[in-house]
Length: 166
Image 1 (spheres, rainbow, N blue to C red):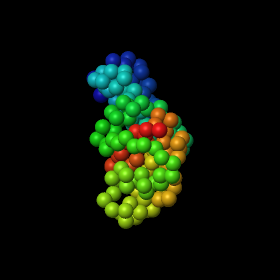
Image 2 (cartoon, rainbow, N blue to C red):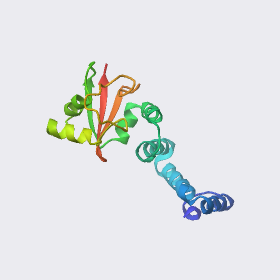
Image 3 (tube, rainbow, N blue to C red):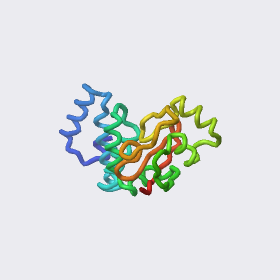
Image 4 (tube, rainbow, N blue to C red):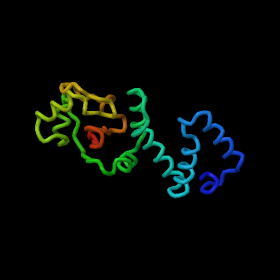
């Protein structure tokens, strides 16, 4: 497919395939093809956003600090684009709000009992970091990123984007 759908020289394609035979788990040719087609269809900005999205949603093994840096680097528009299907809310930041308070304010759960059960079981994430302590306080710089945003996830698919007013 690289020969048909890219403008890469044949020597570069052969090098990619050689690399693939040694490190097939890294999927170098597939990534190159996806990069080329995404740039062709969506332009350089679209490719950049797609790379950021993939990094945030699908790359495993980032430390909490690295994930915070990646999320903090997003603008509000980029966050809105990446998580366009998510529930977006604007909240006033107040000292002393806990994880469970945030979950209930966002409407993540119908009942407080459900919130306690799911959070303590490990199904609640703030900025892609699992939170199990319902009494943990929401802190600036930790839970509220430098771009004044917080990404909340319940389970594997339910996302909430919080834009904080400080």
